[in-house]
Length: 94
Image 1 (cartoon, helix red, strand yellow):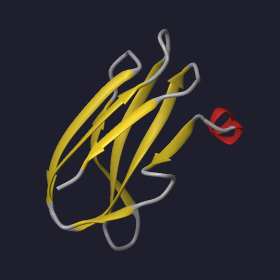
Image 2 (cartoon, rainbow, N blue to C red; image 1 turned 90 degrees about the vertical axis):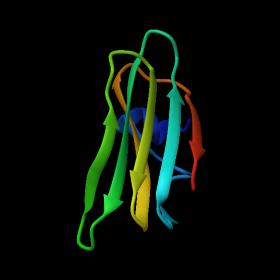
Image 3 (cartoon, rainbow, N blue to C red; image 1 turned 60 degrees about the horizontal axis):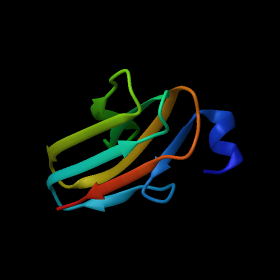
């Protein structure tokens, strides 16, 4: 994790940018350091702005989302609600 992530409290995946999905089920898993609270959001571009289409905001650093959607541009947002540190992120796309 870089210093900018720690200052802002959020990051984007995969690799800091968005991607095109042809539709179907996307699955993501997030695991942050023990004692932190990280949240996971899936955003979709609606033609004029990014909108949240799925979220996992439990009180721990482990989150997961399974989302079935249409074709379009997507990005995953990871937010450090409490604490900071290196996280692991896994993504399965259709």
